[in-house]
Length: 198
Image (cartoon, rainbow, N blue to C red; front, side, top):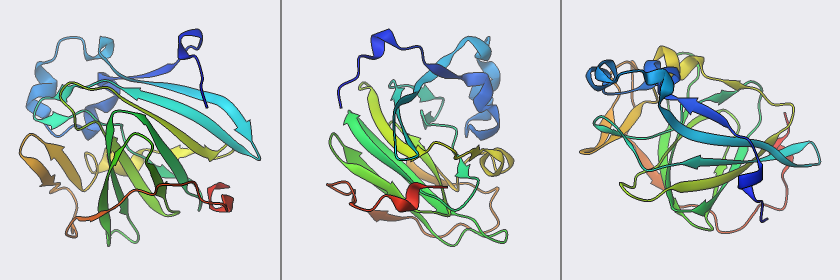
């Protein structure tokens, strides 16, 4: 699906909105005017189909101090999933569940152009641009009626792992952090998208 983003106005995520989830707080506190620093752009509701909406997010290569740039991270209000498609660049997707105060599962998917990432119901997720010089452009399909909840990631200062210059680092704000496993991306869209509907 080709969409000319130059004719669209995005919502943007600024650095000041990320304070509660950034790993390197010393770096953050030294940044002047974080409310003026744009980290990534979100083009929402570009298409709609069967109760689902199609968005595109553009994440330039950038470092948040010791940490690679990432989305804020969210869970879904309700039991529904999400699908991401890498359009350009490379993305690192961290998925984790969180039930009754515990994270029982966490895994990472490294995806390149054309790859598909399926976020199952019940999993919160963060997208990371692991490149130092290449922009990540990705699309997603999600329920039009769905709502995102950022509170878990804000209360825990991010996901249960950070991706830094030294690799993956556990987030000590979680009581238990399972060993991070890896999964491969999917190469084709699922035929049944009912799990995306809230």
